[in-house]
Image (tube, helix red, strand yellow):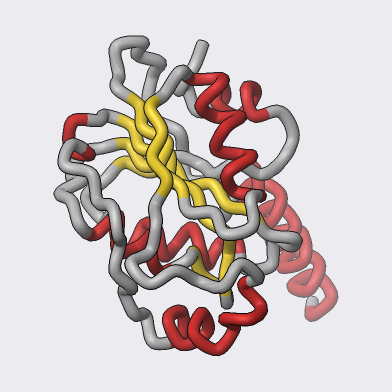
Amino acid sequence: MKKLYVLVFAALAAFLATSCKEDFDPNYPADNIEYDGSRRILVAYFSQTGNTERLANQIVAATGADVYRIQPSEPYASNPYDDSGRIQNESYDDLRPGVANLPDNVEDYDVILVGSPIWWHNPAMVVCTFLESYDLSGKIIVPFFTYGSTEYLQQSIDKIHEVTPSSVHLRTYSGGSVEEWLRGIHIIQ
């Protein structure tokens, strides 16, 4: 009888593991929007070494979006490793460094694709400052990140969701064709 319980439990566990896996992917929230060609799109990004800027430019080319580069009030060293202590402190203490060039019209956009490197397990905190400077309720927020590993990707996604709690969130870029990703989340046709 004990063997029967073990077998039934194992079969149930296997069934639940496989059936739930297809319905839930913790890295990518559901994409519940339809394509709308009249949406105003902004690509806002912070880039220190050029990696995030290159990805932002690909997104702009695919969407025809307006572009805005987030610049910190106090610039970082050209090599982020030279500012490692500052960056770690901002991330771990959830600080909000100033933004030098906040635009006036961010609320006019329907979709904001926001890009950042992942620094000390989070997006650059200057990106959070930018997002928290506006009422983005109901706006579509699409984060994208550049980082050599996906180890802290979910934590970075969660931080963007935390600072834009009243927004609609679509899944982030995870590599491959930028245009396929944008089609998959219904930003382009």
